[in-house]
Length: 68
Image (cartoon, rainbow, N blue to C red; front, side, top):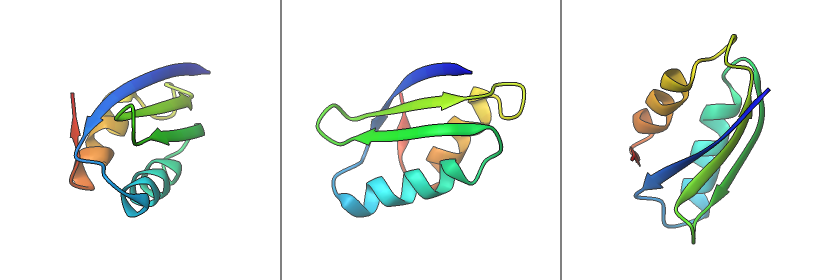
């Protein structure tokens, strides 16, 4: 398992938290998704052999947020 913190812009409310959490958790190999609105970050624990980080970033961006 790998742990990564992504800086994500555009999150402002609980809907944002739910949208990102639901989208990322649907990917294979995702163990944990923690969205922090104040820190504008998403903490991930995942198996990179099942889902590479680029795929996770793309999924967040598909939800309408900017991964920095």
